[in-house]
Length: 209
Image 1: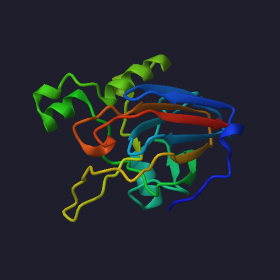
Image 2 (image 1 turned 90 degrees about the horizontal axis):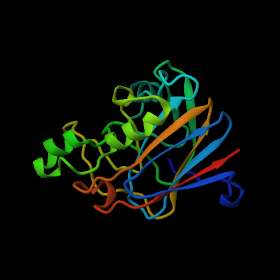
Image 3 (image 1 turned 135 degrees about the vertical axis):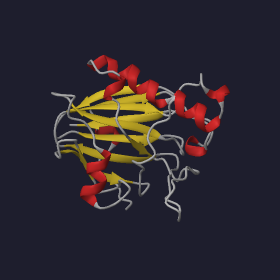
């Protein structure tokens, strides 16, 4: 469901540009709102959330999908942890739905899907590992993630398809933190499928108190 926000960018307490292909992280305090802006359109933003006080509690795609009885994330979705607690709530969304089933690209999956020549291309899992290390986490802490703005329809045979994104320049998704969370982002560098329109671009992160 698409919904607009009443928050104004000029009132944001923090603003962060995130370059194409790059990792990013920040802490979002309970009660704050974070907006992820797809500045140029059709850019997948792979995202994970962790309890800022205890990173063993982290986003659970399984619990989130099961609790809401829907395969995609949009306005009103509660982002649940592996302990069944609400971490964030989606309060605005100008796209309509976001994937949480297709996971993050990695050098291994790139090799299997697209050929050995892609093995050394940068990938989201490596971005997550690099950025997570700032908080004492390693590759074992990287779990199935949300792919904001990524268009992953479920085909009649039950398979997932990765197709052209629906987001347009300036589209955004907004979430209110229900606990202090670490937001871990990989601004997806994938160029072998259409999740980024074959052209990774920058995004912007805004936070309101």
